[in-house]
Length: 245
Image (cartoon, rainbow, N blue to C red; front, side):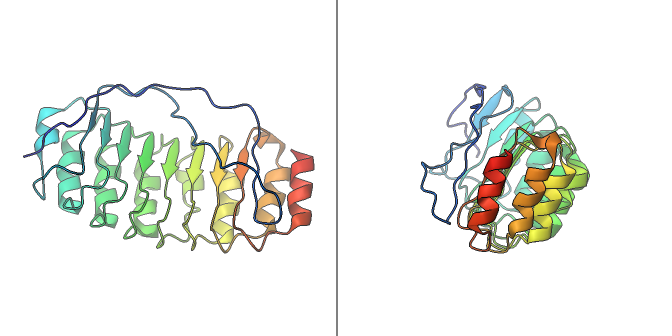
């Protein structure tokens, strides 16, 4: 049986007005702050990873039809079918955290995209079975998405489809998603005017073009671009980007 471990309201917070830069090319600054939620989401439900759950767990879909925020971090027994049950019953979701669930694959995101069309925040950190197919499903179904956390998603590569499917994205965290290619990053920068925060730490295929395009587009003057561990981006390009911003 599913049991509620924590019931809480998600408090909104304001973002810092200071632009933050960090690179592997000689600049040493403090770690990047986690971007804030865009707005409050209520009611919310958080389920503990320490409690035992049934594998397909339709519980919340019956008990919380108006649920807006659901955190399912580290529930190692939950799979695509379980997420399908939840998505069908929780169509009001605005915030969904599926981080560190190793059994979640692309079909889970297809369920989410089909039933949770008002989703604004999606966290997939450590879901290493997610591929471009799942990201495409989100782009095709969740057009109001504002925040995507895909840290350590090693199987995503060409995610530029988010540039056309999710026009309201403000925050994209790709820390450790090392296989995301340069063209996808450029597409995110050039196709989403609302983008303000992009974490590319560990994206090994990032090139100078990402910062060049970010610096040349005046409509994105408030973007916070965090560049860390991108060895193919030169110090000269970093300096030009900082001067342009």
